[in-house]
Every structure is written in structure tokens, then in C-alpha cells.
Image (cartoon, rainbow, N blue to C red):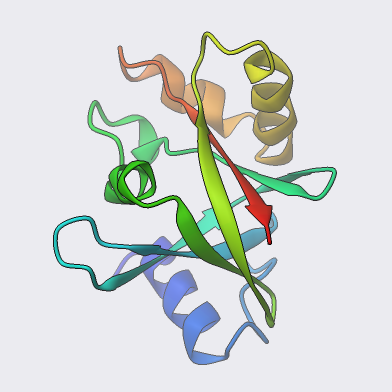
Length: 136
């Protein structure tokens, strides 16, 4: 089991008592509905705050294919987030590289993650989008 999987398991099993800042950056649990199965899928993700919103990056470590949770959001934008022990219903929207707010949001979340997203972007030819999650 890799470090990220272990982190997510701890976050889930402790119901958020452990995990929010375990990897040195703030992270949340994103729960999406599987576009094919209809089952709940959970992902631990680094986030940045933008006012009341949460900004997420579907980088998949710089892989050429985005993570599955992005496809789930595109199919059904109603999600749940858990930040620490607090759960909230929310709506997610994809922000593409051509959108006006993209550069500001990219800098915000990339700075929060110590520049790692720039490194992931350099590894792939796909332009990594952003996901803005707004709690209900």
C-alpha cells in the first residue's frame, strides 16, 4: 500500500480525526457517485480555499489520463466533501485552462501544494483542469 492510500484509509477509518493535515498539506475526502456503477467513490485530495469554495486538481500525478473522480463529477456534479470531521453536500464544477479564472485558481492550489502541480503538468500533454467545489 502506498502512502496516499494509507493516508486515505486513516482519514476514512478515523472519521476525519486523523488525516486532514497528515501529509503536510490540507486534504479533504471527496465522495462522488460512480458514473457506471452508481456506487459511492471516495478520494483523499489536497485542496485550497477560495472564499467558501474548495479548489481541487485532477492531476492523477501527471498521468495522461485524468483520475476517475473527474469523470464521475462530469456525469453527476452533486458530491459530498469531508474536511476533518465535517461533512457537507456540495456541487462541483470543472474549470478548464481556457476559463478566465483558471490562472488565479491554479496558482492558489499549486502554491498550497508546494508547487507539485506544476511538476505534474510538465509530465503530461493534457492540460490539467481544476474542480471548484461549492458546499450547499
